[in-house]
Amino acid sequence: MRDRLNLSLPAELIGRINDMADRKRVTRSAIVEAAVESFLSPDHADMQEAALTRRLDRLSRQVARLERDQRITIETLALFVRFWLTITPPIAPEQQAAAQAKGRERFDGFIETLGKRVQKGRWFADELPGDVPDSR
Image (cartoon, rainbow, N blue to C red; front, side):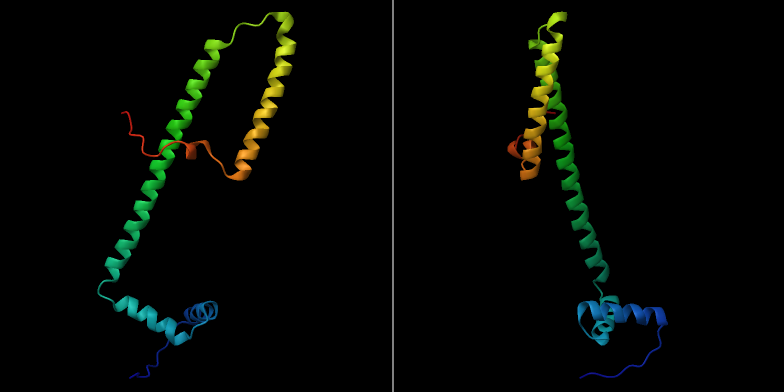
């Protein structure tokens, strides 16, 4: 059984109700009924807290992944620099122009490969196992 209830609302609020009803393709009564039901629901605060907790958990997992990826990036760069400094012999002044040209050629190849991987959505961090325990 349904009873009729007449009430007065600010024009701006009625406009928002109308907009929502149009967007959701439901009646204005359904919008108002859902809002009042939500407001009067005894576990409304619990539902909000649960939703907030789920969002915080998701954000915590995202931050943990970002921290992990950042540690991987730093470690990768450090290993590369150490390796490069270890194996790169000094270059004689007369060979520097040729070495710089070769370096530019290699860098262009690196950028091309990187672009292709990014375009395909392939990431180095995704190739690493996710269950490696933290060494700290």
